[in-house]
Length: 234
Image (cartoon, rainbow, N blue to C red; front, side, top):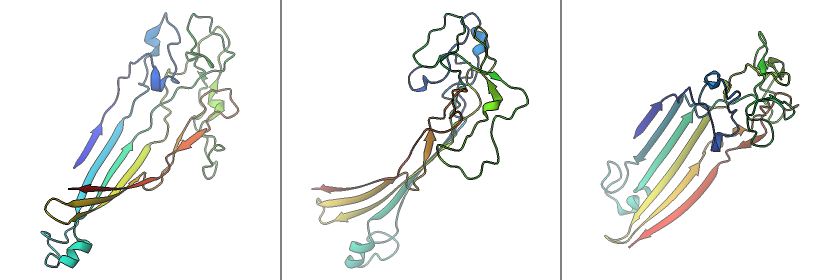
């Protein structure tokens, strides 16, 4: 059964908490209209496809349906998959911990969540010609494209930028064999592979403009996971 969804979140969301708390908050409580930006949860495209297929062999199927031996070996098999693909979420670009705005905007600890840098006109946001990607070393963002504002001034960068984390790509596969011994006694053996193609998900993009590691990914996940289960019914 295929299912697809294409959507965009509220672009006027001003405050972010919980899972997306690393996104910048309100910079100036006296001019909150200036904080209109993309939602921190904005995922423009999301596609999910779930499918299953019973192999046409064995008793009651099209092929090899007259032999008990053949049915025991090739009958009762089915395969399935769930494919999930989604755009990456946008991030905020933030200032260092030493920045002082002079406004009564609360800090949640660490770098001021409300501080945004200035965008340097004419400078590309992304670095190019860096060769093959190397985790922790390849610098995705151009530090020269941003400048920390002077204390007691406000930066002009958007609260949530259009710079996005990598897209999420995931495929889960399964294969299943059903055994029928009697009318009431049967079993099912199922092998499941989550993230079957072992795609890595990179996160923790350093978004503090003054950090030496600015624009580099700091964590990765997404290892393949496999499990097998046996269910007996009687």
